[in-house]
Image (cartoon, rainbow, N blue to C red):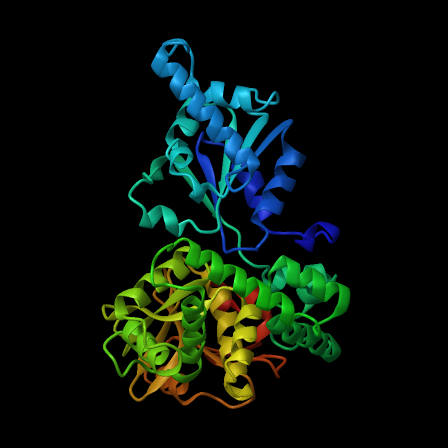
Length: 458
């Protein structure tokens, strides 16, 4: 990855610091999609904040060495060579692995690709309870630990941190426009040329997304030479995914077909499904356009894999504003907006529909970071509202309409007039924002700075 040549400041770094400074003897399990910069960031953090750093990758020679030492110690314990009563075999394992190992809080042990070996994964509880040293585990395909019975659940001994693709705020920081961005008034009181500048960078972000390697290429040469990188990233993800289903019918091509179908459903399906479920609709698209050799069960397995691998995230559906009638997992969004744009282009979806999907993907990703619940869209009468959020503390219901142009949405207007929502929020690209009664309009690229709790005080 090219990130090392251009330093990209990541918000997750501060979360790593918080974990170290408020350590509770739990192992930190760092999750995230493939190629989002987990290993780079964790190693940088460790080298800057610990005296002794031990790095082990279970897909490389260091992982083989650790397992070899583990097996040797196991044999020694069985034969009586190792004094099992007076020797902690796991501490002995790390002592033999690295001269840097000291069991104190200034030593951190990083085990990368933890999903590759259940024997090591199943030691997490002992790492948490028997060591003073800190442990960080990383993995891109942690869905494997859900699929395989050999992996035990260490939930009470683990803290979780997800590292995501660069957010728009992190992207703005990478191009040195944070001061301009943070100074923009949400409702049009700043200089027009600054709104136009940040909007142009938002359009770039919809193409570039947040994979560190792609962002670095953009910083070096703009948006013109990114397609090959996305092609490589998608191929790696699909081929590696198929590897975990070795000997199965699920091939790399089927994973890619499923991704294309997910994007098509985002572009074309606005209210619900003609079939009984998302999976059935997905299967129909794949069978019709790509391959007849896939069934509903395999579609379910692929979706579960995508979700646990953090490649996609789900969205619920609120029916007629009845909060006791929420349909789970009724839509899926790709975790990286740049990858979504690449797949949209490959799928030959109309530009107008493509722009709508990208804008909604952006807002969805912002909501994931803002709210404590799974984001929802709503169906009301014969229409749909892009997103809905209900604040549990004050019971306010916020309707969110994502628009590329200046037109208003009929469903959100109807929802506000009928008292189904307390506030209507319009997110638009071509606007400087404004407030009118209970209607709030802000530029879509400023939505990361928007706070629901402040809306009544604006």
